Structures are given as C-alpha cells and as structure tokens.
Image (cartoon, rainbow, N blue to C red):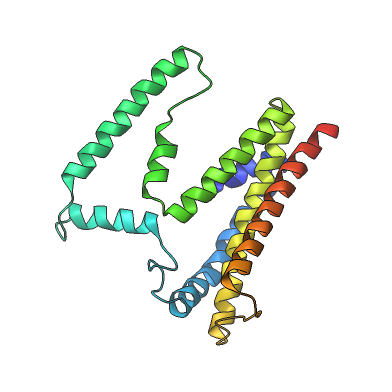
Length: 212
C-alpha cells in the first residue's frame, strides 16, 4: 500500500515529507475505522466476507496454503506443480520475447492474478486493459496521458470501495432492495449504458492531458 501511495504521490507532485505524514495519519485512522467497517460488511452481507456476494480470493488462497503447510488440510500438490510449470514456461517465453523486442509479452503476474480472481473481477481488469490500449494508441504513448488514466482508474477503485461501505450501511438499516419498477432486461441495459459512459469518460479524461 505504501508503494502504491508513493507512486501516486509522484504522479500528483506530492513531497515525500507530506506523504510520510499522511501515511502515519492513514495508519491511525485505519486502526479505528477498519475493524468496524469489516464487521459491518461481514454481518450485513449474505455469506459474509469470503462468501458468494463478497469473495475474498486472496485471503482464501493464503488460508488454504497456511492450512496445508501446518497439516490442517491437504494441499493439491499436482495443481501447485502445474501452476509452477506454467509460471516457468511463461517466464522463459517472456525472456525470448524481450530479447526479440516484441511488443507482446507473457508476464507471469497478470496471468497468475487472472487465474485465481473471480470472473467478474477478471472481466473488469480486461476492460481496463482494453481502455488502456485504446488510450495508448490514440495518445501515441504519451506519459502524461498514461499517468492521468492511472489516476482516474485509482479513483474508480476507491469509489467502488466507498460505494460498498455505503451499501453495507443501507443493508444495516434494512434497506435491502430498491424497486424502480423496471424489468431485468431494462435494468441490464441501463447498467451496460452506465459502464459504457464511464469507459468513454475515462478515455476522454486521460486524452485531455495531451492538450496541457
């Protein structure tokens, strides 16, 4: 988290001293607010944290590894071996692609992340990659455009987290559904329209850095 914060600070021109002060404030604030927020999400969401509606793939992955290493469960060593072999093959392929100066690379980390994340999250990552490719092509590799797009994406991630907490507060107040009187088909179309609108906004906002 600190590495991500420092990188963001570089993009927006923050000084290291002010960033370190805010890191300390962030740790203190999180100590008071993080536990009750997690408890609220766990108790107001069906299945809790780690359930179907609030999957926690990273936590589940590390929990299975810890249980297996300490003898509480059996690890699927065959699957682990397949994953290690796939990672090694990707690393070797990426080495040769790098030597050939190929624009296409086979990085191990994106493949590994895509394998264990839920499909809903992976599809959003893929959409973000497509938007990044479109923006890069239209801006001809402009660093300013890339940085602005990265900040926009970071803001969307933070906004999604805050929206999740807001929905948990509504659930705690027994407001579990909002009936707008529209059918499922229209609701899906409105969702797709909103997604398309946000995608266009992100690309246009990033490309606006070219004129500055």
